Amino acid sequence: MRWKEVRLVDENGVQLGIVSSRDALAIARERGYDLVAIAPTANPPVCKLVDLGKYLYEQNKREKEAKKRQTKVEVKHMKYKLKIDVNDLAIKNKKVREFLNDGDRVNVEIWFRGRELMFTDKGFELAQKIIRDVSDVAVVVSEPRMMGRNMVFSLEPSKETLKKLRERRIRNVSKNENKEILGKEIQDYR
Image (cartoon, rainbow, N blue to C red; front, side, top):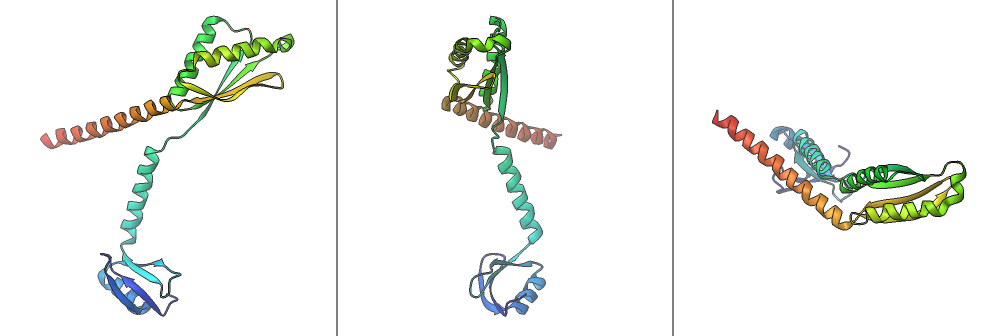
């Protein structure tokens, strides 16, 4: 260690006082712990007796658990043509609705091919129709606008949709936990 003296805290959080760094290392070895500097900038530096392997294992476990509960927002894309049939429109809107119910953002793109570019007003009508069809689960993030030969706009899940998604995930987590507990009980019974 590079310090003459350190303030030593034992494995239970009890302060042992200010001791020389050599004595602190000797105490750590004697008790079978590692000496970790918790506050190296303090005067004198604060060191604690810790089982470093166990500490790192528990920290890694906490991080994994936090990742499980984390929601990742993906951006999905859906492309429409200006001359789209009613059934095709319904199917694509259904897929957009599924994306939104899963908590994903959706970028919608309407293609204009050849002379269709002259009828951008029809594209805006189609965009408004799409927005109306998914308005119960979506909020418009960016309004329809022309980008080159395409019309582009973005949708994201509404607050109510996200609330339902959270409730659904909580129910699924509790079901999975119940299945694990039930599985353990069955194994114990055998």
